Image (tube, rainbow, N blue to C red; front, side):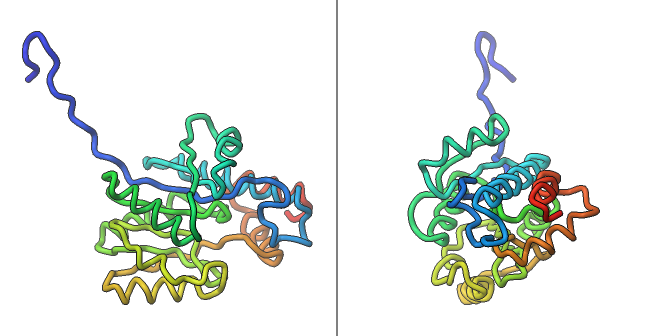
Length: 233
């Protein structure tokens, strides 16, 4: 009951899980450089932007909060201007990818988030379903949930509590990322669940497979259009 003559205490709404999309600014010559020589720098940047927008749209279609984390802090303003109005954008900070993932997830959980999910912007096939399954795995008792990718890494990681071990000693950008992450989590006595595959797009040979998978699908419309414009659809 509200006391007469004043307002009662405001009940704070519980925080939602936070989904963070990790990206690089879609700048020619600085993004998706491993797609050369199949794509010129401008084409790789255009495709990178399409990836990012499709992943952001997929997350925005869900009930969870979204934050985009940009690799270089000086690119935050640029990326913010490319995204839908109101999208929260922040820098990833210093350190290797493991340090940046650990810092982002630990800060979110320390702030009261019940869970956090990190996605790579180079996974244009990401969907709300991937996020739902990851959060369901955490609700089912997993400490860490991963969507493995075909190249030996992973496209999504979800945590219900901090797990710095998941990010230490990992040979990033190699085919040993998933194996090293899994071993580290299990050695720390944490439960890890592996979910459905979610591939990232890094190499020229990834493009044809992506185009085939998207040819008759409704997902990732910007990526489909970008691939066609580049003669890969």
